[in-house]
Image 1 (tube, rainbow, N blue to C red):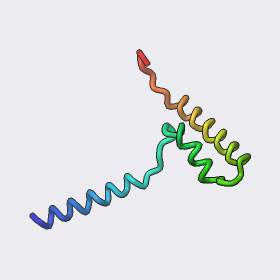
Image 2 (cartoon, rainbow, N blue to C red):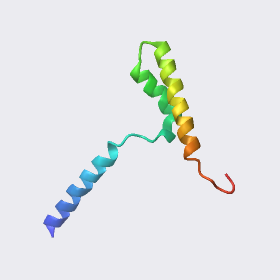
Image 3 (cartoon, rainbow, N blue to C red):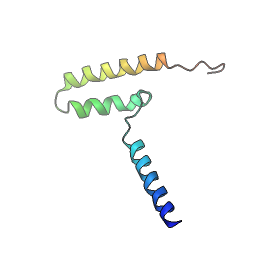
Length: 73
């Protein structure tokens, strides 16, 4: 019994670790594009701006493709 409990705990830690390392979806790109651009190019403002524009365009394209078709929204 105790062996199964420890095995289940270890399995849950492995699964939790696997889900934590997944990258965020492009749906979260509104605030993420600016932060990603700042991290990629901390000193070059022109490259950072270009990266931000590309990221935002990618987010809009992803959002258009994955648009949910609801009746009221």
